[in-house]
Amino acid sequence: MKFADMQYTRPELESTQARYRELLKNFKAAKTADECFASHKEINDFTEYVNTMINLAYVRKTLNTKDEYYAAEYEYLDEVRPHFKEVLQEIFAAMLNSPFRKEMEAAWGKIMFSNLEIELKTFSPEIIEDLQEENRLCSEYADLLASAEIEFDGKTLNLSDMSAYFENKDRDMRVQACEALSNWYTSHAEQFDTIFDKLVKLRTGIAKKLGYESFTELGYYRMQRNCFDEAMVTKFRQGIIEHIVPLILKIKAEQAVRIGVDKIDIADLSFNYPDGNPTPKGTPDEIFAHGKKMFAELSDETSEFFNFMLENDLFDVLSKPGKGVGGYLEEFHIYKAPFIFANFNGTSNDIYVLAHEAGHGYASYVAYDIYPYELREGSPEISEIHAMAMEFFAWPWMEGFFGADTQKYYHRHLSKSIEFLPYGSMVDEFQHLVYAKPEMTPAERNALWLELEAKYRPWIDMAGIPYWAEGRCWHRQAAIYEMPFYYIDYCLAGIMALNFWALNQSDHMSTWEKYVRLVKFAATKNFVELVSDSGLPTPFEPQNLKMVADMAAEWLEKNRV
Image 1: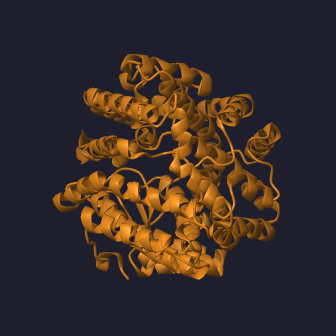
Image 2: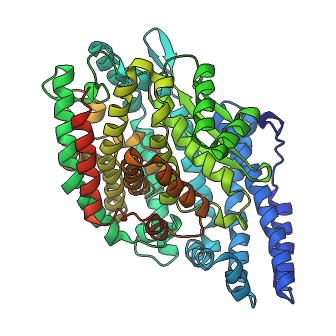
Image 3: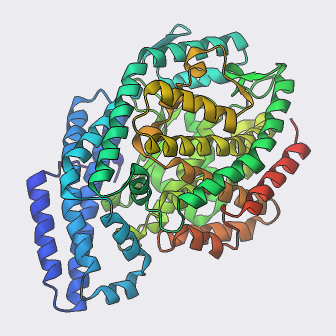
């Protein structure tokens, strides 16, 4: 079914709760294992329907944040989703306490039930109003970003459009773009600070109501941490500082020499080559035509997936006024259809996003026959391997996107993949410190951010542009507001993606088979189990970080541009 033909029907609070309670009653009344499984199938199918309606409303709202109908619908859903969560928690408890749990575990595996136990630690009916407020604040933040209209270069631009100017060959233009962006964020700084201050205090209050000392412990449960803890993450971040930061200092020093500057400041951060960064050639239609060829040649399954997406209009990638920022993959479960949202702006990021989100989409597509739905999508660090590794598997087809700029794309993509690791780690440590001291003032948070910049990204000169110089640039990072503790998952997955990249350099077929095997396990194994099954060391092993840094350094040295 084409996206435009997918019908949205509001999941009303009363009728949805009533149906769930009826299904719960039937599940508890099961007299045999067969009756238990049949009853669970009804719960599974209804949940997929409800989630599809919620996701349809979200996608249509973010496609046009000025659409009053879907804005109102999602506002309603922000209010009712905590109530749906309440009855789902009762269903999860019933599954954990079912006399047929052994039979269910035999059919679906124990990890699903350990994840349900984690899920029960994140909720109590007394926090429903708090969750509603949390949803409202996150939506307020997203809407604020989407509302940006910046007058620049004779145009009215949104945030996605503005980011393209950071790669302009004219340095004066880059400086002016930084200043224009700085002015917009600075003019809304009080709103950004107020929203975040409310979120930190609200989440801390939720955690205390649930019996936790701080939000951090609850945040880890929310992120379904089922095989690693805070101590392991802290050690990983230290490994990034020891093994990755020195490599990036070298990369950025070489960048400064290439583009003819003494030091890398904000205006130069994303400009890598004196004759300009690599840019995709052709129109969006031509880009998608080559994308179709790429996925057709990669494998029969990726070809089937990409054609399905094209035939059903499941891409929306052009930037336009009022559209939400960034990119994402959403799912319409009852149609077995992923949806890819992006904001093309004419930079190499368009191709990176296409491959990244297609990695998510491919993983979703091949998992739709897995039952129950809880076993389809793993915790975030697993799903991000799917996406980040696909970026590298796409390399052999980059010439069709970049032509003579292909080698620059390889160089920049690998460099940026390495450069992201300290940034993602910095975001993670920032959140740990903020939630350890929720009474911090906005000024103290800004000062903390600048301290962490010096620790994780010492190659950047922050002076000159007020927004960055004052330590406010964390306002731009949506995950800090909307998905606490998510960003370290990108880093963990990023190390694994680089492992796949390294293996793929010498043996594509066996490396692709390892990747497909990992993808098809979906959420039936935890992160550490999946990595071990692939025969790779986990990111928590320091030698893995050193190995990745050494291999990347060697490749970049041999492939200078």
